[in-house]
Image (cartoon, rainbow, N blue to C red; front, side, top):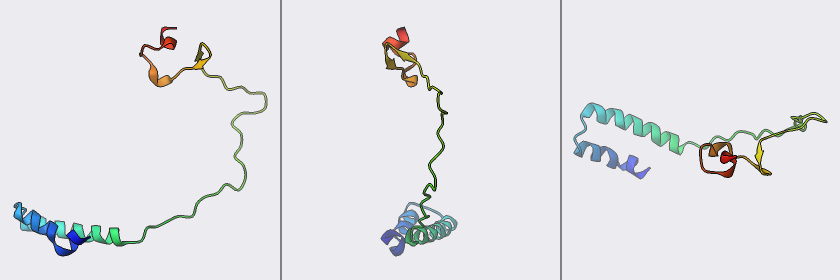
Length: 87
């Protein structure tokens, strides 16, 4: 905020050779940024479930996934030298 307020950024850009048209655009952009930084943070009310979520599976259904020698397989490890790849 201090860099924007005292014009240090614009002075640095002018010293580096930024043209006047670009400095005017940068000044406007910095002013907008200052307003956004100073504005209060908007918070939204947290959504709380009113009833429990429905279950994904019905009674009697089974979830199955691949395993190798009793251990789950990592789907991101394809092509590496793991025992389940060799199996």
